[in-house]
Image (cartoon, rainbow, N blue to C red; front, side):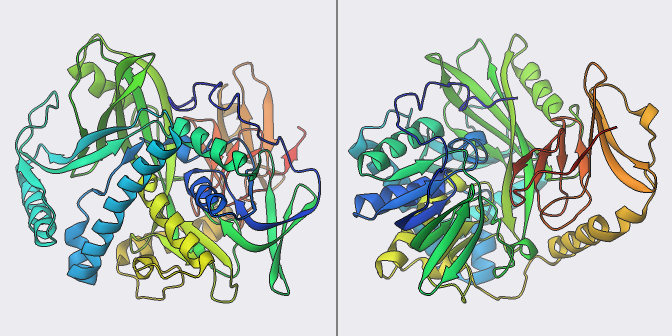
Length: 502
């Protein structure tokens, strides 16, 4: 399954990317990860004259950024009432202001660099079809209005179904994220920055006042390091694996064969549903997303893509699904990103993570904070996202659930006997079985060919679960993902699974 954004293989055709790292060298800044956060950092830093090197273990933006909805907005669900009650009105206002600034920052980059990426200003809506949820939208309206922001309560948004009410943020935006990043890559390389794809960073170590990044058997020496790998792959110090989980959500792109509404829409309640339009072959198509769940929890096609397709058929009976894809987002337990120093014990090493499904906007926020720190400038919004914060965990339920899941996957589930035998596994499906008192992950392809792996995550040793939708092994603890043949796909793990010959 491939996303709409990643469907065009020619977007990077004329950009001089390095295929992989093949030598040792020194640079001012080493950026690990070529998604929107890492490349935005590299763009700003090369513009300021820094020598920047970007490392990407696969292809540019092929993971979280390439599988997003592509919405650029300061409306992050019903969030400002939560922020005001949890941290105070000034905190909430600063969060709103910095995200509004990020929208204009992205637009300024697009205009200055003449990047053709289908950028369009749109109104953004959080809507509900349920009367008992309207009170939460009204509370959010009051909270945002008290911050001095001009939002509106409306009862019509253009959606093909009736709503009870919605909160509207005006002059938000949408774009094609991969076309945007292609523009950033072009600028970075024109300013003598280097971008290495198919290059896996496996460790970073301090050496006096510098850092050595180890990747593809080579060493890169730098004064600064930015960890931009979606989920930090370095466990200690930092301990981000104790402070975040990953959530998987699903999207389909649909040719409705009808004129579509304007604006970007997301539901207030659960399950989350998202609607926006996009251009494909010079025609407007519909993107429907949602049905999210904690990564690693088994789910079915029927309950994910199937439900999105049912919605498309209900309102657009003649529609045709063009693309299906899913993404995973890092979510911190207090629902705020971690932006700043990777650890208080590692000066000049920085991180941006935990963007909680709003990475298009928050990535720009994070990049500006990190660039200011490297340049020695004060950023007035840095305090909102302090990466080394040690505040009490506000979301006790999610913290408890994460501890229970990690305990089960690290210990208890390993002791349980699998409830399926080898013969019960159907072709094009997989499961964990027991062989000689050892757990083995088995996948049988459509022709019955067998792939056997050690179903233990190479990150921190959690027992993996089989994902029958994508034919992958997923980690329920921290969200790592592996292909059916054991190849690592998603961080924080970067090593492949051990495989067996059966």
